[in-house]
Structure formats: structure tokens, C-alpha cells
Image (cartoon, rainbow, N blue to C red; front, side):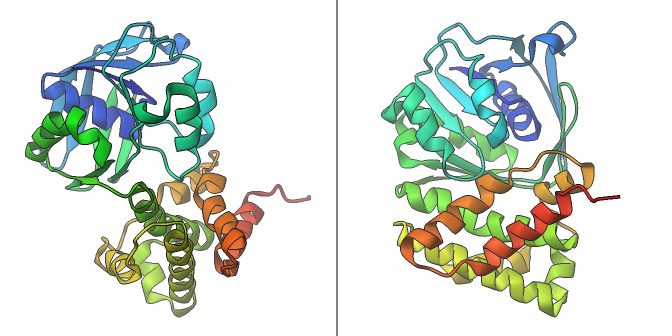
Amino acid sequence: MKQAILGVGAIGGLIGTVLSSLGEEVIVVVRPEGLPSYPRRLTLERPSGSLTAPVKAVANLTESIDVLWIATKTYQLPAALEAVQSLPECAVPLLNGLDHVATLRTRFGQHRVVPGTIAVEAEKAGPGRFVQRSPMVRLNLAASAEPRLGTVVGRLAALGFACRFVVNEQTLLWGKLCFLGPFALVTSASGLNIGEVLADRVWKQKLDAATTEACAVANASGAEIDEEQIHAAFAAAPPGMRSSMQKDVLAGRKLELDAISSPIVRGGHGYGIGVSTTAGLAAAIREKLSPRSP
């Protein structure tokens, strides 16, 4: 199949490299100013070794494609979509949060958009160069993708991917957010890694409370989330793990704070569920980013 990547950061670069290494035709959409010097091969350093695979780079996507993988930051999505001038047969967003799904379905059509989530620690090392830190990649897709993507997704297992097709879209999307939301908010507010959070009584309580709030809102929204599985995932996480948002805070980059916290806070207010810990953590992060008076 012909597959395109919109958002060639850590996640988009990883997906593009592995797909191309499997023999798929891959197009990456890059900014016009970066197009002349963009590498014609992607490189992914992985715990099991490196992958290098060919790619075609374009500034505007005008040709017909089978699958458009979207891996921008949530705040980059509107501007990035301006470069997509063709209608993909299938669009797979791997963004954080929930609200992007409705945006993309308005643009591409209800049945062309197949939500997905991905869990991996990865970084962009430079144009066309990416690093996968965690040994496994967890890729979950809505079950409606299986007829179109089942074959290629199945081949990803050989590259260390654990893939699932999930029938309930709310479970799919909230399943990640119930982990990511508390994790990103607590690590970013505290400046601690997950091991340090779990060892600190106060921050552990905040993590537990934020998890309870997220799971309650998720299940009220039609998801089927087992809160104990989320707590178990935190306990099993590598102690040194830090969230991407935490790294963005340290680097002074723009955050996906609204995309990650707002669905929980908004849902809590809508369903009458207390979300004071989530709201308080988001406020604390905003305070950290506020310019200080001299």
C-alpha cells in the first residue's frame, strides 16, 4: 500500500521507518523549507538494532494514498492539515487526547478516520533520524481498521510491536488517556520521574487520585476501563520513565496540556464527577510556565 506520514516527529518517524522497512511505499510530509535537504532514507535506532529505509519527502500531499498516519502534536494539527490536498482512503490519527477525532472526521468523513493510540518512548534525533527507547511498541487501532490494515499490522509483530484491534472506540481512546493524563500531569507538575513519584507519599496520592478521576470520567463516557490495570501499569513502568510533557516543560516547548487534561476536566463537569486533582495539576503546570515578574 501507499502510506503517508503527517507529522514526522518521534512517533511519525518511527511508524514511517518500520512501514518502509516492511516494503511499504512511504511518503513523509515535511515543511517546505526543510524539503530540499530532507534525507531520502529514514533511520531508526532501536534496542534490538537499527533500521534504515527509503522514503519520499513532499511538502504537499497531492497524490492518492491508501493510509495517512497522523502523528503531529495536537496544537500543530490544523496547520499541518493544510498540506494534505488529497483524500486518503484511510486516516489513522495517533494523537494524544480525544478531540482530534471529530476534527478529522469533519474533514475526511466519518468512516475514513480510524482512531489509534500508540505507547512507546521515542525521540527525534534530527531530520530523518529517530530513536526508540522502549523495547516494545504498543499500537491499538479501532476494529474498523482491521479489514484494511490487518495484514500490515500483523507484520509489525516481527519488529516488536504489540498490536490490538479494539471494538469500543471510547475504550481505545480513554484507555491511553487514563494512563497518559495522570502520568503526564503528575510528572510535569512535580518534575519527578515515575519511580520517584511512586516513592513519594504526597505525589503518589495525587497520581492515584488523578487516575481515579480519569477512569470515572472515561467509564461515564462509555468506555470500559479497569482502574486497577492503570495502577498496575504505573507500578510496572521503568522507574526512570518521564513523560513527553515533562520533557517539553524542561525544554521550554509548547505543551499538549489542554489536549490531555481538558477531556477529563470537561467530562467531570459534564457528568458531575469530581476532578479537582486533575484540574489542580493542570493549573500548577500553567503556573510553572507563567512568566515571573522581575
